[in-house]
Picture (tube, one colour):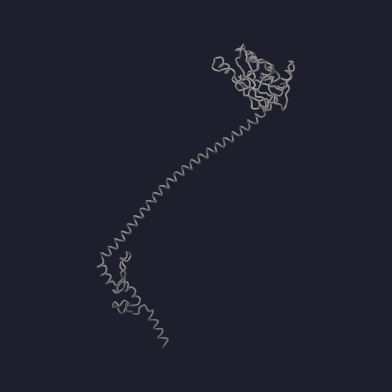
Length: 352
């Protein structure tokens, strides 16, 4: 019996059709357990409900009857709450609109920045292309320069060999003419040489003859050695003095140099002027050689034992030939080629 009573009590606790009284005391006494929830939600007049304006701030809770009365009596309050919510939402919308406006401005600025960066990038790409092209061009030029240098080196070597041979021939020529032998003293200050190229000869002499240019022309100065005497050469292409219009006149001049203070003075230089033959056949070349030696001389009624140390305000003493070579011989032979001529000058001041 006890077991049966306990089982019946359990059945009453869970049976869906067991009659129950509404917990809200609305007067409904016998409601099936499975209908109780629906009754409370839909029918019970005493069930507690929240105000429908709870979401906008109303905190009222009560039965359906009280809730209905509440809604009727608090319309203005609910409208006030709604207005406040609307104002808050309006303010929030304005804030959002301002944020959107700022974001739009930022987007515009970012777009401008992107455009500028793209333009800068494109410019850098073009600059890089130019640099690459320039580097390629420079590399090509470098290759060409190396090629030309190699060619020039070979030509220079051949030219030096030719000049060495010509130097030997000149020395032999001087000896054969019973001239004093030209001796080169290595390491001393008294011997020097220069090859002077005079280009555009025809144009130069034409300008001189028409008065558009003046004689003489001067060579680049050179030293007889690293610390020796400073020498310059003068050339009157259309002649000088009695040889005006007839010959090419040439002279050498001792100039004021950097090392004059430690050199020996006076000096009696010996100048050898050589007009180089440019005949393509080396074996047929015959250079024109003329030598002038400075001896004692008289200047300004003063007897001088050679050339004294030059002074900057003193007239230069030039030594050479008015009739070095006739213009007719110069133009008829092989001394003038491609409108250029070469004059080699040897200076010997060892016998002073």
